[in-house]
Structures are given as C-alpha cells and as structure tokens.
Image 1 (tube, one colour):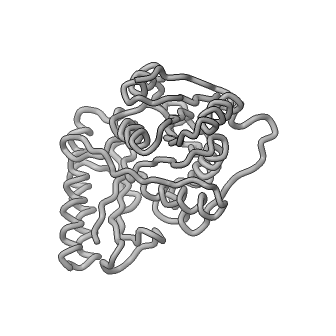
Image 2 (tube, one colour):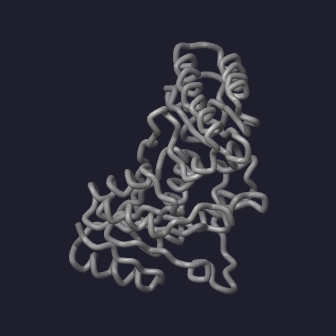
Length: 282
C-alpha cells in the first residue's frame, strides 16, 4: 500500500500523470464530491484492479446545484475521505478549490442534449450542464485511460458516456454496479441526512423497485405496475415522487412496454432528502 499523495493544483495533477505516462503506467480516474462511502471505495478498487495508478478527485461542484439545493449543507469530510482512499490503495487525491476549477472570467459550459431533459433533468434545471462541464474538465486535466462512475446515477453515467464520445475524449467510461446497504438501499452521501424514522422508510424503495421490475419483466401492464408502485412508496412514508418511470437505457426516454435494454428509474423524497435509484427490467 502506497502513501496517498494530495495535490490541489491542475499543474501538479498533470505533472504526476506525466511521470506515470513516462513510466508506461496506466491511469484510472474516480471523480467524486467527497463524503465517501463504500460505493465510492468500490469504484476506487475497480479502478485499481484495471489500472496501475488511480486518481480520486474530491470537488463539491457548485455549478450542478440549483438555488434551492444543498450546496452549503453538502457533507464534507476530507480527513475521513483520505483515510478511505488510503485503505483502497488510491495513489493520488486531486482536491482543488473552486477558484482553481472556475477561475475569474470562466465562461464555458458543456451541454448534452437529448439525455438531460427527462428524469432528473426535468426537475433539476442546469444540473447536468454543471455535471457535464466539470467532468469534461476533469477528464481533460487528468487524461486517464479509464474513468469510473456508479450505476446508481445512471442518467449521469449515460450523459458522461455521450460527452466523452461526442467530444472525442480518449477515455473509456466504466460503469460500476450500485453498492447497496444490507436492506437494499442504494448507498449515497445523502443517506446521512435521513432521520432514523426516514431511514426505516427508505428501505421500502429497493423492495418496491425490485418487485415492480419483476412484475414488468413478467409482462404485466406498465401503467398499472407503475401506479401501484407509486402508491406503495407514498404509503411507506415517502412525501413526494419526482418520477417513477420505465425508460430505454440508451435514450433515457419513457417506454410503454418492456423490450431489451429497459430500466426502471425513480426519484423520491423522504422529508427534504431526495433519493434516486434504478433497476434493470430487461
């Protein structure tokens, strides 16, 4: 296990990558916003399995938060995050501040149309523009062989795959299966916002999703299954659903019947905490 090196300037990140390249070493990148949990650690471990050197990034990106969202309250624990990265045998942490990533006069944004207007894009105006811009910057700053993202944020994963392809960024985008708690809840930094009562209610989310996906796969009527699943979540204590939809994985557009490559997507609130998940159907 190597020591974790920490850099905060783009120039220092590039210098380290340049040295690795000169030595013929492959590089994996794991972008995060910190508040790391076992899901993030799984990304680092997968990157370590596939590459000889691994960079994790921690940057709470302000441009992907809306005016009513939790930028100031977003959990931050750099010391705890660093300990987890050491345990996962990460080689380098890139942890810039906002002025390093968005210097005075910054005026460029990256947008991915088609994949971003639906699902989370319908209720989080500007979110995916912020994601696409910061990920594009990180990919170009590090120029890794591979970059790793969790399938929990499946829409984000598809957006990043598209931008890398469309902008000819020479990196393989690797999706890693969702890590779950013992009761099936998808791991998320926002889970720590849940009260004890809400955390108990949250366990209904994966159960309802799994059951609905099985019903859909068996040929039940999509409209009926979705309506009953929404009712079950509200009965379990969820206060509001942004969406619960069956979509095509590639286009992220809603579909009315199950075909190859369909997936169930949900965004639901417990109090002020917004939880997302997705489940393959066929």
